Image (cartoon, rainbow, N blue to C red; front, top):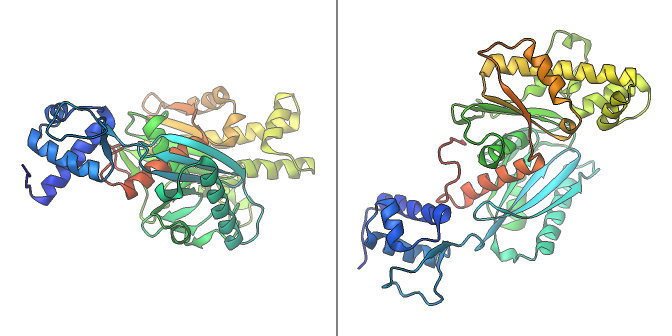
Amino acid sequence: MQVHLPSTIRKMNKEIVLNIIKDSGPLSRTEIAKQSGITKATVSDIVKDLIEERLIYDEKEETDFSKRGTKLHFSKNAAYGVAIDLGGTSIHFGQFNLAGECIAEQTVTTYPLSTKQAFLDQMAADLKAFLQQSGQPIERLSFIGIATPGIIDPVNGVVLEGSPNLPEWKNVQLAQYFNEVFHVPVTIENDVRAALVGEMYEGALQDLSSAVLIGIGTGLGSAVLIDGKVIRGARNAAGEIGYMVFHNCHLYAPSDKGHFEMICSGSGLEAAALALYNKKLSAKEVFRLAEQGDLQAKYLVDQFEDHLAMGILNIIALLNPEKILLMGSVTKSLSLEQLKRKVRLHASDVTDVAIEISNLQHHSALQGMALLGLNQAFPSLQFLKDKQLY
């Protein structure tokens, strides 16, 4: 018997059934009805639609809809999407199924190109090669999600103000470009905010309502979760802590980089080392020299940690988060205990906060972009339903 319901109620029931199968399947129609509170007749009717849409499948090869005991499975591999984490040093590609599971991953060095168009063309070429190597049919590509440094407009898919570490990265029609090449929905997000979503889903920020993620790599940025809501600000610039200023900011000439980023990022540490040693050293090399007892390197690292502790204390005073999570290439060299000690010197019982380094690192941005891409391409699928992502 065909069950007729108002479209809004039917849509809601369909989402409930789909997500129960996704999260708890395989289940029989009777089990779904019990778990959802929806009548068996309505469940059977919805199941027919979901099978036709290839979002679920019956474990029997030839499904007899009159038999209610057969188990229903979520068709997590019916389609897939790609997430990209675009950094100043490396670009990471990840392939994800409809359950948000990573099924393939690849990393390339960020291209030393001088124009935006050449950069985008190379990204598209590498993405095509990545899809070819994965063996997945291009016809089943259903979304692309791109995490990028800078201030972005997620609604229109535009990088408004980008990173100085990428070529001509301002007013970039990023979503439009990749949509025209691959003909699928394209979602873009700030890289640290994407990583925040990934950490909320499967990392160190699960089950938290208020937290701050700080990304310290070639550049510096943060993303903020307050009372279960990802904070974006009036123009999507919330969390751009690289532009925070300190008492000695007048010593620096104006720059594309903010003052805090100039003194507390991988590129900032490398610039300070160049001025001190009169030769090029990577941030990793500066930390290694400090560990070996080089007094100049120890001075640079100590100053770096002081500035980072100062920034963390300001964030704590303003937002009172449950946890500060650090990620990025520089965090692999940081002394977490030393940093915690410096922060605790000025923290009270009320403002005491857990400080950790991400175990997921770059994968958190890929995971976050996969969820945001799935949210756009398949809005019926629910991930992080107790959080407000937009």
